[in-house]
Amino acid sequence: MKTRSLILSLLILVSSTLTLSAQGVTATPGKLSQPYTPIGQQVQLLAYHSATGEGSGAVTLTFPIAAGEKLYSYTTSIQEAQPVATAQYAGATVTVPNAQLECGYFTAQPSQVMMTEVYYWIFDYSRVALRDLTLTADYDTAEPCQQVTLALSRPLASIYYHTLQGVNMQVDRGLVVRYQDLVYKEERHAFTIEQKEELLPENNGSAWHLIAPLTDTSFAIIGDRFTKGVASQYGFPIESPVLQAHRVELHARYRLLSSGQSQATDSTATNAGQLPSSLSAPATVEIDLIANEPATVLYQIVIAEGAGISKEAPVVMQFNGRNAQYTFDKMGTYTLYGKASDRTASCTAISQPVVVTVQSSRLEVPNVFTPFSSPGVNDLFQVVHQSLISFEGRIYDSWGGLIYSWRDPDGGWDGTCRGKPVPSGVYYYVITAEGADGVQYHKSGDVNILESDFSQQPDFN
Image 1 (cartoon, rainbow, N blue to C red):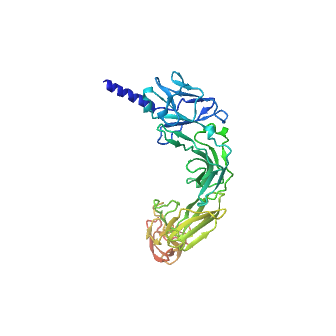
Image 2: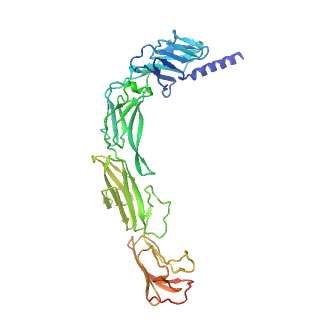
Image 3: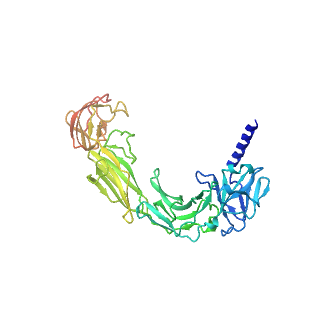
């Protein structure tokens, strides 16, 4: 039982050490930064900021502490840790006047010092502050249309700490850069301006690479992970001159204005460009190009034969501008896309291509309709069609007299002549048409009007 109680006590002590938190650690006359723990480490890194931002001077630190614990400090490893001689204990806190910086602190039961795993490391930020720096932004020489390079006028001062095991570690201070960018909103078909912030990793000295923004903007370093709330006293932000945008991002919007088909297309067969993948000629399509401006100034709309972008594909339309309409009147497969260039004409973009197929033609003629006995149902003599680029229909009576004619395949005969209903019986049609696939249609036959309320042939004179 004694052994079990001892083990339980040790586990409680170790658990207490592992839950060490920087909550409640304070400094005077300045202040401490928010704690930062590098990935995989158990250190609480805190930067001391003097009230003026210059030199630390005499610093008083206050730590939370549990009953029976002592405050220890070290500079290289836990092997040389010693109780802080000037520590003043008062209940749940311990205060250290004229505290040493650039060293580690931890609290522990005297018998459990070597079991410590979590600790504080406190450093003087004035020693590594970013002062008298300038920031430049320019396009990357290897990828001038995609990346920008940010550079400081001199390398950053490094921040180091020693782990309990004596390993000297460099801290990624995580500079924060702020700039403006454009973001495309699909639901609005437009770009909106947004302010972005990014961490600049300290793994490449004083130069960083970012994806080039889509709008003219300056870049401003607004601090690092240790300067929240006190950045202004160190001269932040550090801002670059405005960099003119070169990168181009292009989107295309497509709308089907009219289609030569008498029945609705399959609504599931649509693509991201808001077009049905299968069209019935004559099909008129409107194309709008949307790019980031003012960076983008040159636009071109291209429609080419085939299912993809190819230099060898025959071009059926090439238009210099942001908006165009085109009517497809020939069967085949086509690719639609846009091109855009920046104001230097050196950076370009191509929109996501859209592939459509213009269907083969079709023409079917009914042989009966009921224009007067069932209003709203089968009351129009009308063909079923797709991909017809020309059409003419005529209706004759039994004596060969022309009763009605029309040229729109979506139109039809309503069973009247000169505004008066014709009697039930047999009438004759002659229809000629041409398909987008070159098929010539010549159809003739008879059509019956059933259940008419009229028993005699009206006088059409």
